[in-house]
Image (cartoon, rainbow, N blue to C red; front, side):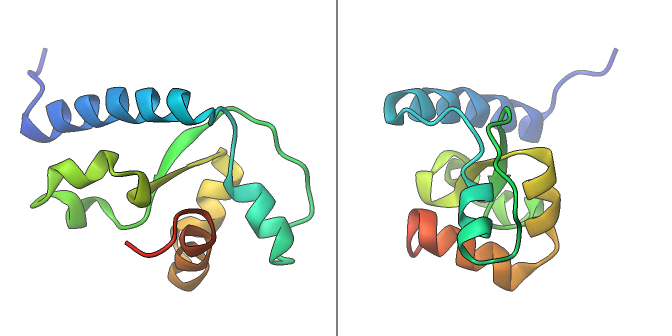
Length: 103
């Protein structure tokens, strides 16, 4: 069995911190679908379970691991919404601006 490396430990730590922040703020479901609906890009109601969608790609965080759990760097997104914003940089940035503001 392979051992968890530096990045894996950082991701686990970030997930624990994100969960704590989300609980404190009352975030439990996808935040992105509502914004995409407001922007006229999607047309569905979503109350699905959440996963972390980050503002930047994985390599951006390698040199600044503490940013992984910064509230301005992540939102909760269902799989469908996460896939939708993942490769659309302008839309992803607009969603983050509406939900979290500037970096």
